[in-house]
Length: 329
Image 1: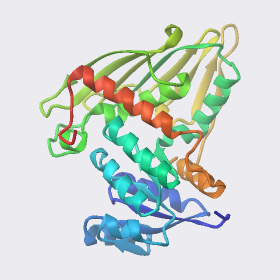
Image 2: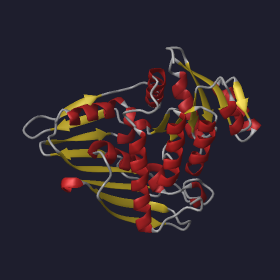
Image 3: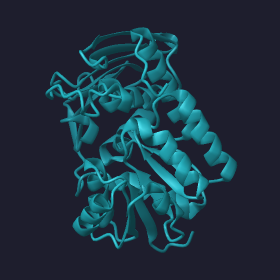
Image 4: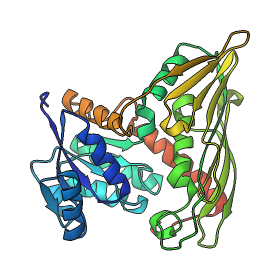
């Protein structure tokens, strides 16, 4: 693809779709040309708000638009697989919100179709593309803290119980693990590489049957481990610490949208590295997707599909220990 503007469509008109639309508007080489909703009114309202010229009252019409290069999928978790398949079957590149799907079986099906058709596909784990997390990977690769042995990471917030909310509805893949726990599992995957060999976990399943709080210990080869927790009924510190044999790196505040990392090594003053960015941060995953499209790549080396599938397998294994399944399964 030439270095012209990439033409984006957004599938869904919810909160996260709006966040991504704002991010696209901050990029000179991106055009938000179309939005698809299940209602004409919602599509029109979103189009008015974000100056989107084409407003479709169905996802099928958006997927069929020949002037859309790539579609960002922002629907609830339980719809990701079918929405991805719809877009891929219409020959569209896809950037799909996390969690990529409900389970690994769905993820494998979607990935297989993308590879069969030679289409770009990526999980929209936006945190991975932030400047602070890019610098974290660089420091780890350079051996700044020696061999990484442990990770501690959390993501939790308190919200009121609402059985009709996607957060509490099993039919929509509700619960803390798929909504915010996926961030912590993805971080462990990024740092340690591969999937854990052992998993120990505990969760509180609330009145609607989904995990309201959860704690996980992921064990990797050589005794390395990640201690993680997530919640939708409890506010947590939102911190990430990567600990090695020669020091540690803290990513803060609110590590999942961090602008600062602190490198601590024994006997030396802490090095605080500020990595501010403009906008809401979602532009970086869009930049990566467009880079891949222009380079003719069908997946990103920063968020490869095999790793996305491994993360889904880990999430499946965690839920299996709780006996938590969703109606769609």
